[in-house]
Amino acid sequence: MLVKQFKYSADNLGYLAYSGNIGIAIDAGNVKDTLTFAKDNNIEIKYVTNTHSHYDHIPGNNDLLKETGAEFIDCKGIQSDKEIALGNEIMEVFFTPGHSEDSIVFKAEDFLITGDTLFNGTIGNCFTGDLNAFFQSLKRLIVFPGNTKIYSGHDYVREAMEIARSIDKDNPHIEKYIRKLSARPIVSTLDDELLVNPYIRFNDPGIIDILQKKNVPASTEFERFKSIMEIY
Image (cartoon, rainbow, N blue to C red; front, side):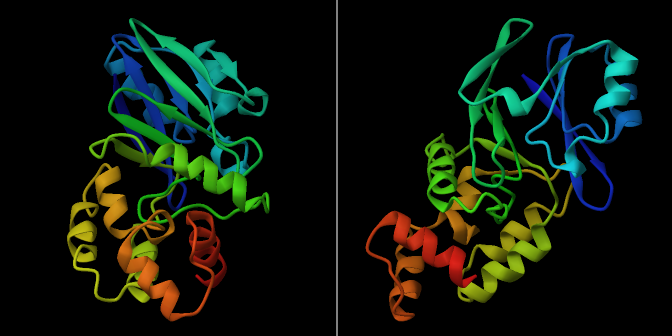
């Protein structure tokens, strides 16, 4: 399965994932470029959907549905895992509440489309207030193979790395990460994230040491995650 990334607004990222000539548009706010790419590559957009229903991720829905006649998959109705067939391949959908009540993540063989659950270099705000649910959602994602590509909902790389450096100023991987993500498309791997993203490095000895020196709760995975979220 392949994926094409499209930027829109100031920093939003939308996607067209496809297998053969069958595609699914996800958070596709850049309607014009999405439709042009699909036409030029003979891709039928069969589904239109979103990683969550926040206003900045759904502006392209109506126009895409009107232009393509695609089926709309409402993320609000997905409260458990499911599968979507694209040609001869299957895209898995995981329910990942935390950033929002209706957050979902799309998984193909070698990539994740993570919306605002997991960004490149950081994570989304926990607007639900349920840190435990958010923690469990992130735990589901970070166990995938290290070479799994992360396609997120926004380009926050520069800002994220400034925060990462403020937390772990001696991290030798940050500059390399910035250079790698300075090109298009904006994509990292889980291995990359586990080297620089402080919000999922709650088992990293360096992060544990930083938290212990601050005398904050750090005995369990969740305590460390909660401490990082509350401090930074």
